[in-house]
Length: 150
Image (cartoon, rainbow, N blue to C red; front, side, top):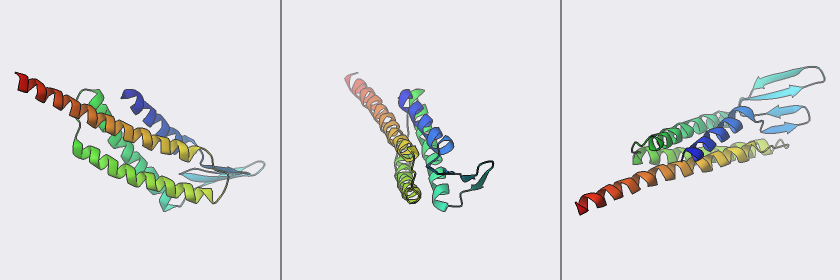
């Protein structure tokens, strides 16, 4: 569980905050900004795309839910089914926004592996949510069986 959770956090940080999504000629773009370089000077401006902002915030919200659920389970607390359900819904919307941003950046050419890294972050996030809920359900089932025997 903690390995999956750590992997999820690392993939989100890499794809959202570190990696460029497009590198072409002297242009690079990520979810935050577009940078254009000449021989001596580089200029950067914010990316004014609503889909990019939605991708960033959806990813951060999904990661918050994943960290909450995975951390709760790793610390031995019971996870909430409703928070898990919200996590699946937010994750599905976030995965769609990643697909939209991949299509937007694909038009420019020069795509990097950042969209795949973010997709892998969503897959590991879904795995953490599934593992956290399943472990909690297994614990409840074991407690119920023990109380019936007593």
